[in-house]
Each structure stands twice: as structure tokens, then as C-alpha cells.
Length: 314
Length: 276
Image (cartoon, rainbow over the protein chains, first blue to last red):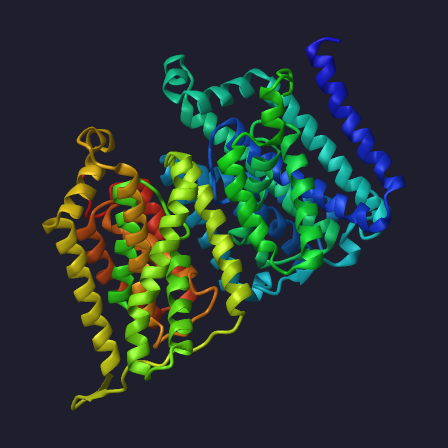
């Protein structure tokens, strides 16, 4: 098999397996998996910025929340339908990322991390400040009537799973296509050596801004879908924790790999799920996982596998 | 409280200046200091004032030791790569927070101040303890300043700050300097917490605000510039109260965080920092 066919086959196989899992898994795990797939889309967006372009952002919760609230608020206040609301979420995530990027991308490295962190914190506080409109800390429940897409009721298990899978598959295909495209190579070039790519005639600011906007669209889509599928929109999704989570997923699964975010989300979700079964100290595991990963496996699981032989892994 | 903020921020800035490490777990060292103070005053069978003084010694030492341990086991292995250390200190933040929650519990608990004294001025009364905090913080800061400028240890730290490799060539044990600096920075945060804890209560989430505020102070004052940090701490510590009087605290925080982000974007060397 040629490289391209092998890669597409691998990813199609994953989608097929996830589809089959719907009929095999008990409802509890199927719901978990739907959640993981949506979070994996978020992490994939994060990975496009961090893993491929080398932009370590600590503010992605803002894009996630932008998508979520852009979806939820029109539904709540004006009774907008689910489909248009989802689109609004996508646009909002990208627009937010574009606005932040215009300012934050003037900095690099540590400053970039702090600036994105500060913007995200300001975003979170803004949601709290306009608590009358946004529901503040308590959030609000998305109206069941709006949770319909093409006539399917997203609040019931099977359509919800399929919707999550469809989003995941679309996001993964988009990601795969993007990183194998010429533009994807330029993104990696920015990560590896910005000066040299500048000398080759690429404008680092524009490439990074574009990558961040795409990343924001992913995060916004994930946020909107999360609110739509699980019926709840709240300020807690804008906290710094939701900026850390995708980073954790990506680090665990492997930064700069297409499947890494999903693998990381899957493992981390069940690590927390299982440990919280017998101890309430799950935060400890999140912290320990971060420290151990950065210490011993900065490339993550798939990154290590790719290094040890499977070089064709995208 | 500008004085306490100055202590915390100087600790953060010391670590950044000498080690080039942005310590996201700095607020947790503050929190650990406050909780340490509670444990010391709670379990030491001596009068409140004595116990508090003991806490002022023990808590920073203990927190400093924890920080040194974290430095040697984690940060050193990362070779102080700026981005990796941020991720690692975020991990440490979660670990410390969870440890505090597990061993100390979710409640906020008070620590008795070492003395009750109210200065009655003609037009308003003022808590004597608050004035004492200002004086104590100033004394500690003076001590740090003397340490940095007048002692061999300070000289070694400054030498490492200027050029790590040259310092190593001159026979300075850079690893020990780093561990010491990290411990000193954490101990300063802990000392600030012990000073403030009779006014605020000790709580496992209390590290958030000091972290954010000291970040703001350090950035406005210029990364790596101790004098700028002091000025900025005074300005922000005082203006925070003023802004909160006119706007709601949330709005004040929004304005402050946005201002800091914009300062970093347009004047990365800080408002008072010198261009490198």
C-alpha cells in the first residue's frame, strides 16, 4: 500500500470501529465515548496550534466557550434552531481566535502563553460579569426543542453518539487533509524554524494567525457541539482548566499527530473516570500526569511510536 | 495589601529573573504557607503570639524545602526549558492544590493574629496588625535586597542571572543556585501568606488571586527587575482598592487582566523595565 492509502485506511478503520462501538458498548460507555469524541475535536484544534505550529496557548478555553455561548445564547434568548446555532458557534470560535491572534501573535514563547492566559481569564470574568445574560457560573440548560439536527433528537443516546461521531470524523478528515497539504508543511516549518521559513518567503504572522483561526474554529465547533449534545452551557467551561485539558490530551496522545488528541482524550477521560471511582483526589492525577509526561515522554504516546519505527504516521 | 503583594511578586520575579522560569505554581506556595501557618499555630502548644512567630519561621522554611525538592526532581530534569517548565508547574499546581484539599480540607480556617491592637487616630481607627504587616514586609524585602546586593550568595545569584554558562565556568554550582533561588522565591510567597493569614483565612484555593496579581505586578514592573516590581506592587496594590471602589471587583479584574495582556503585547519589557 502506498503511504497515503495506508494513512487513510488507518483513520477510516478508527471511524468504523467507533461506529461499531455504538452497538457493542453499554449506554454509559457510549455516552462517555460521545463526550470523548467531542473533547477530542477540541484537542485536535489545540493540536493544530500547539503540536503542528508550535503555538503553546493557555487560552483555548476561551475559544471553546465562545463556540458554546455563541450556540447557546441565541437558542436561549431567541429560540434559534440547533443547526444555525452550531454554525454560529464555529464562526464565533474562529472569530475569537482571530481577534486574540491579531494581538497575541505579536509575542512569542512564554509571553504568548501568558497573554493568551490573561485574555482567557478576562473572557471568563466577562461571562461572570454579564451573568444576567450568560447565566454566569450556574449556566443554563439548552432547550430540548433546539437540540434537533435534520430531524434527529440529539438528547437521545443513539443520535447523539452518531452526531458526535460525524463531527469527529469530519474534524479528523479535515485535520488529516490539512497537515498533509502544503499549508500544513508550512505550519510545521514555523514550529521548527521560524527564521528560516521567513527567509524562504513565508510570512510567519499570517501563517500562525491562519493556524490559530483554524484551531479556534475546531475549538468553537467542539464547544457548540458539547453544549448542543449534552444540553448544558456554563461559565465553568471558560475556566483555565478547560485550557489545560486539551493540552494534557495532546501531550499524552502525542503532539503533532492526527490521532494523538483522540487517544489522549480517551485515556485521560477514563483515567479520571476510574480514579474518581475510588478517590476524590483526581486533580492529583491530572497534575501528576502533566509532570510525568513532560518529564519522561514529552512526545506523547503516538509521538514515541512514530519515533520508534512507524515514521509514516501523520 | 500592597506590602504582601510586593513580597509575593518579588518571589515570583526572583525566580523568573535568575532562572528564566515562569512559576505558575507560585500561588500554591503562597497557599501552602498559609496552611502551614494554620497547622503550626493549631498544633503548637504555646501562646498564640509565640506560635505565630514560630509559623513565620517554620512555614517559609518548609515551603522552601518543598520548592527545592520540586526544583531538583522536576525542573532540573527539564533543563529549565521555558515552555516545558510552565507545563510542569501547572502540574505541580494541581498536585499541591489536591494535597491541600486532601490533608487540610475544603474549609477556610482562621489564624489568630499575634496581637490585637487598634490605633485610634482622631478621625479613624486603624488595625495595628495591618501596620505591622507593612513594616514586617518591608523588613523582609530589605533583607532580600541586602542579600542580593551585599552578600556572596546574592553575587552568585546575580552572576547566574547574567550568564549561566560563564557562571558555571567560574566554578559556581549553578544547580544549587537554582534550587536555592526557587526555594527562596517560594519562601517569600509563604512568608507573605503567613503575614496575611490573620487577616484573610487559610483556604486551599487562596493561591489564585495572589498568582494573578503577582503576575500582573511582575509584568507591569518588568520581568527580572526587582525595583520595578516593588513600584508596580505599590501602584497596583493601592489602585486595586481604588478601582474596586468605583467598579465591581469582577470588572476591576477584567480591566486589570486585559491591561496586563496589552502591556505584554506592546511593551514586553514592562513599563519600568529596561530594554534588553
